[in-house]
Length: 237
Image (spheres, rainbow, N blue to C red):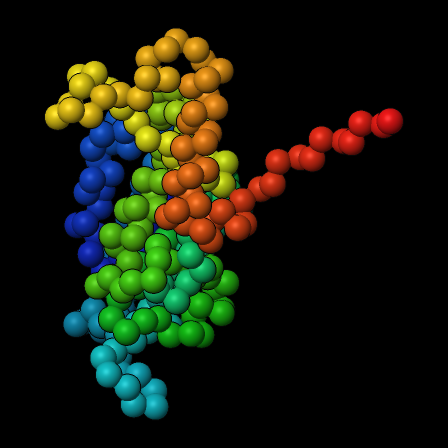
C-alpha cells in the first residue's frame, strides 16, 4: 500500500482536503495510508522548541537539525520511500516526478517552516528538496497536501477511468485540450462541431492539435522540451 508520512508542526492540517473526494474515498477503502507526526514531540525542552536564531545573523528563525533528525528517525518511512522536504528552493515538481513517486512505496514528507531548515539535517538524512513553483508559502503543509493528492489520484483503483489520467495535462508533454459539455449552445458559443460529429479519428486529431496549440501559446518551455515523435524512415527509391 502506498503510504504518505508527513512531519509537521501543524498535524491538525491533515488529512484536511485529503479526507474528501477521490483521495478521501481511496483512504477509506485502504488504497493508501496517511501517517502524521508532530515534530514538536521530538523537542527535548518543556517549550517543545523546534527553531532557533540563524547562525551569522539573519531575519527569522531556522528549524533545528537535532529535533528534525529525531523526528525523521522516529518514523518508519519504509525501504525505497522518497524523503522529501518541501522548500521554495527545491527542484520544481513535475508530473513525471509525481508518476515516479506514485509508482513507489510512498514518501516521507517534511514540511518546512520559518526561514528554512538547518542545512546539516538535509545532508545527513539525504532529503530531496522539492518545490511547487516559484512562489513562497507560509509552510510546507499546503504543498504537501497538493503533492500527496497528485500521487494518490494515480494509484490503481482511485480514478474511475485509467484513460482519464493518460490524456490529461503533462501526460504526453503537452497541456490538456479544451473540454465541453451540454448545453450545446452557451451564450452564443457552440460546442465545436467536430466533437459532435461521431468521427473518433477527427476528434482525436482535433484534441491533439488543440493540446499542441495551447502548449505553444502558454508553456513554450514545455513545448521546447516535449518528447519528439519518432521519425518515419525515409522510403528507399
